[in-house]
Length: 98
Figure 1 (cartoon, one colour):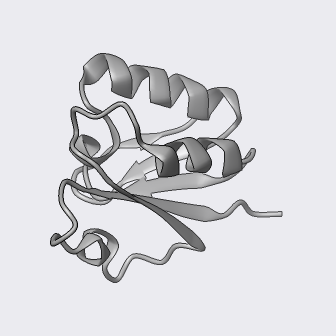
Figure 2 (cartoon, rainbow, N blue to C red):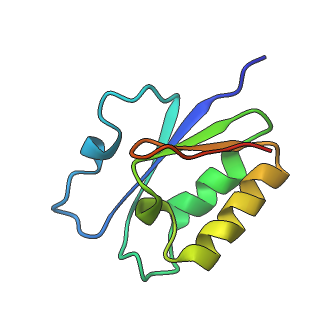
Figure 3 (tube, one colour):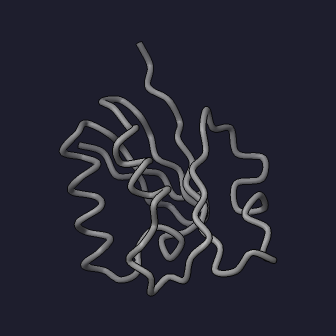
């Protein structure tokens, strides 16, 4: 069975449009946070991490939407790949596979 494509979007303020981040990108489910990149409180990212399973692909618009800094990004990638998940970035050429 193929895994799901799970999207994650984050906007810094309520007046920003999170829908533009993955516009035209096929995903099975999307998790969206409205929080500053500095904020450690990102409940939808936590929900995404609890949701993804082996074979799923996490899709984000760009790395800065997913992680606050390089250390945060590394920790998230380790968490995802440790569960058998993969990551894909819409802008750029980054795929993370186990």
